[in-house]
Length: 290
Length: 99
Image (cartoon, rainbow over all chains, first blue to last red; front, top):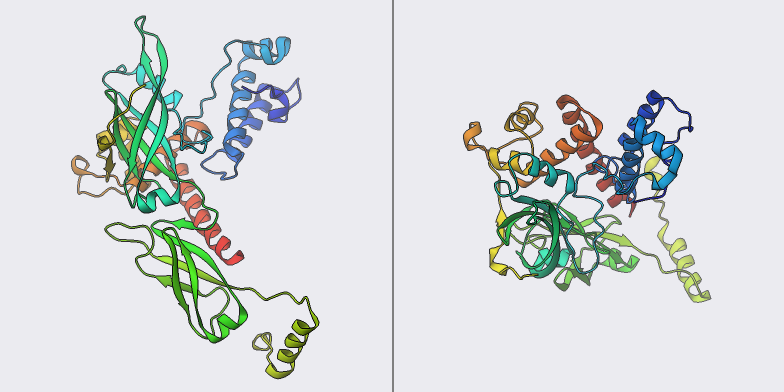
């Protein structure tokens, strides 16, 4: 899958001992394991590192790699990392393919027919779980052909995302006799943050709105609502709209965090206004610290 | 290619012990050990009527990956999962403060 130099990937020299390779791999596996490292590249790095180790740990594969380089074998090995990560979703809400490792284990232990539960990851938008939506997803499912070999077939499914589904919940679906369990992952949203059933959003306000109190328009996943900012509001203060988070038996709350934004000084008049405030207020926010 | 009827979707509220072990492709004993180590916290009095909520299902799958990929034992997995959750909670807090 990648033409990376396996020795470079593991950070070892070409004459490194087996022990040195094992040590380098263990260290990198801990560093990049996608359950530990939440960075965007971690899953890819983990896979690359696993692939490199898979070859370099085995004397025969290593010798072949040393001789032929990246094309040492065809087909190339699958990294053992099992699904859930690393399936780059496209904008259509494509679900990740069922994971290889688990599926082939399932074949080995009891056969496909008896253990036809597949795991897929379903990436959805926050708006979808907030209001419910029908999503078209493509799944790659394993199937045995007439010679008993595993072949992949593509299924297109329309899935109704129930309203109020939250991150980490699972759906059970049937596709052509195969039972699928789909883990719901909510994609990061540019404005809203999801924490369990609660939704948070930053709400920028002007200094005078914060000081005097105001009614301002606030975005929610279902459109704008008016919210009352109390007088003498502080920056970072949270306003709670009860029950306006993810809907459900126990609906979540919507939290707005106030951010006071100062207008920039771009004219003599603006400068004069700030100077007047400086003269009139005699306010020192640092005094309390002394 | 085929369309499934959209009505075939069911939200899973919880998995049984057998379902969870099949789902994670592990032996039942291994899931029981995860419960003993406090990694999983099922509802129900004994193993026959245990119900694993979605967060438990996620933890079980993470635990399996961590043992499989990093060679951790159960005590190690339990500690790592606790620390990861603590770290995630802190970084969420940090993200809110930093904004």
